[in-house]
Length: 52
Image 1: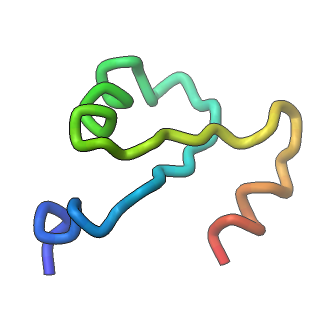
Image 2: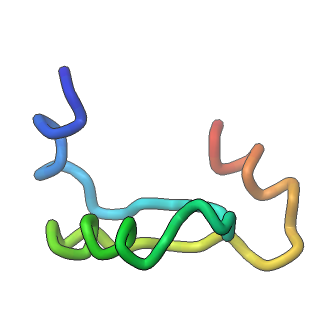
């Protein structure tokens, strides 16, 4: 199953604060009514917890 087939099931996108994620990247998900949530600042262990 491709991601495009599951977009209607997604409510949130959790991403870290990496510079590779631009405003345009967030806009694509916002246009599909998906809320983009950022991980806390200076909390490196958060990514490991979220990925589980």
